[in-house]
Length: 278
Ligand code: SF4
Ligand code: SF4
Ligand code: SF4
Image 1 (cartoon, helix red, strand yellow):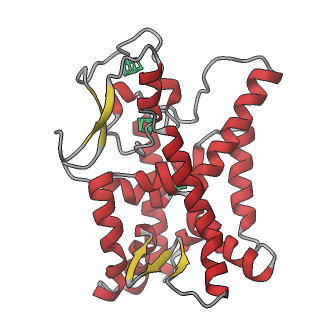
Image 2: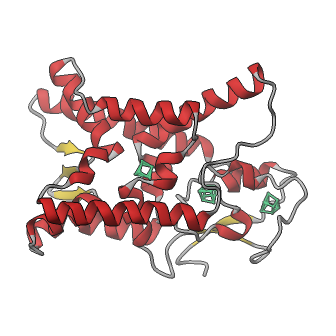
């Protein structure tokens, strides 16, 4: 089984949902409301954990109404890991498109066929970068009393812009931020936002338990690639070596490495392991 068509379907569905919500609301259908900062559906609420974290620091309150939006995202991430990032986030879909454009230009125009070298290639340094960013942003939210990281939350901004587009047929200045990071990924540093900065992805990565779904290799934890083609390595958008780093905080459970390993001579060493398979 290849995960790619399923992942793309889910990604496009969540992209379409950003536009569907304001359209439904315009027809006074309020079964689902909100944006990807905080969604309300059928009495359930799901909020961006980074937004909640900042609200707690900005307000100085640790009250149940503030924390209620965390329940569903926490349970979801505890079981399935960062599938929000790998399968649902609208920014990830745009970043995939930009990466594809960049690859086409490199191979067809520049004739370069080697894999991309990502900015800050080592996982440890990439994680340090994004947790430093999260820490500084959260501290700033606490000091200023404003959830400053919301101004750089790519999924939240995109869904708010979709709402503005549907309701007012325009875009706000914040769309400029999304355009700027996509352009930076296209021209200079592919995948840099999710790997080095995004506060939402950083928070979601911390919600994990021993049973959380992760990528594991049936070969154990080999130090070197277990096939000479190393098909899984270049397939990973987070710059990980999936044969040994599937449990890293950067992993989004996107399953690209699993598909690459299976399609490469059908070795099939990589797979998801979770609560049912330790
Ligand atoms: S890291 Fe942030 S922008 Fe990237 S996929 Fe996750 S939530 Fe979306
Ligand atoms: S290790 Fe595999 S599942 Fe994790 S981000 Fe990389 S390609 Fe996706
Ligand atoms: S593609 Fe599969 S067999 Fe090859 S290095 Fe990656 S996990 Fe090992």
